[in-house]
Image (cartoon, rainbow, N blue to C red):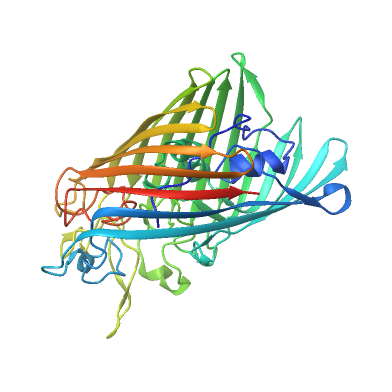
Length: 450
């Protein structure tokens, strides 16, 4: 997966999440699309334009230094597993080329029920390099009923705010969408959620929208029942927009990949009685300010918390299967538990700016993934931190088509396992923190929004 999302500059401003008319041209193209705030050239069809189709396609190529794609002895293993730490002795690393293609359509439907009530449905999936981005999970598969006075109630599969809004507009506008949006202790996809979004509230001469989402994940787990709660608020006053969100979960898949789906401790219900409970949460505050017609500044801070999850074999035998563990003291003991998992907390932040002149937009961004505080006596990445810096330049043809270029670099505080906020030791940048403390890259891309 690639750290960069396309940099597409808004031409009409960002539609606010709380708008309950659910006009798909703007709402999907910006708040849900997670790629752009320009109006999508949606294809409307059916009676009275009941159905709408929009989406994007993207291609990107990149050349990076200090890449070592085959350095890990067991390349498919999760970072949290002890044997994933092993590297191939003497494996060379250096410059490599990578590429990515993305395609995601949105099919929407809307119907006016009368009396101010409206119903709408949304279906969307993303394909990366010709395959499902996250196999088995939809990005959007939901239905909602809304009223201008009462807000909206949405049910089904949907993206979370902690991932989607960190990804767009904040990360996307600065060229750090993946490293900012997909890191940390959150989850990105919900499978069977209920979401209430309030109407726009007039507060302190600005607009405030409040929202709550709840998901029970895999209901087959009866002992360690999954539970997901996300609270979200957006305040908009003049040229200032502030987004605050809090996500608290129990018994989802222990991870530090905030784009991942929320389901259960493992995919197998039969593991329920063999496991211990686990939880994690994330709190985030982000803001952006339009200084003038050309300059926009933005930033954010995020707190992560993991309870830890001990390691246990769920299916013994020659090909033993393990659970999804987190921050484990391998070969250690705690209160009679072998291979115990330890709680951890960390803080990450992001800052950047954009400058627009005519069809051109220049951007620069920085993300800091901080060290973690934990009582784990083993080193599992808590002592490391990372800084990612980017510079980008975008040209908008104003017909849905844009091209862009970018350069970036990463610097780790030390050699060793990557910071706890990162799901892998070379995640987001292809630069493995166990091999080298720094690396850089440059690339070109194009995106078309329809």
